Length: 222
Image (tube, rainbow, N blue to C red; front, side, top):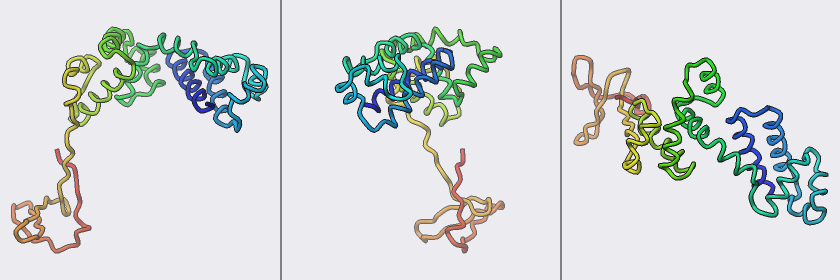
């Protein structure tokens, strides 16, 4: 159970970062998660033997974290976590979208602060995507599918692209990466009938390959 609760605390820290909460609260959850992952005894056993008092005796676990651990032991959920998930739903979608474009949360915040990214521009489509997908997980998976498909084709994409591709998400496939053989910069072909490699010179001549196959370079060619 320690790892389960630790994961929730780490997730809560991540959601608080997205929300822009204080570093104190964020670090408190991260610290509690670290302690739980390092704890040798299961917290449910500690609670069974000593109750809430026993949880508060764990070095580094404050009263607030102890009460949330107690709540999870009793109800298998933490109300504050569910509330945070709901409060940050739109922000999570936007953050995940920019993450798919290689932008970290910190970079997103810095760009938004400098007005390089107008954050409010993405709130409406993020909300629409969440409603369309029906769940956070489905929305994130849809973004990922579109990102892989678009990036493999060097295409730009927006959250709206996910709407347009919604009915064909399962059919979206990344562009196959084809690597072709080269020798010292010249393209090569393999002649199946003669079972030999040939190098095509810049003059268009087919020259029989006489070097080691390890010298063949396989490169992606658009």
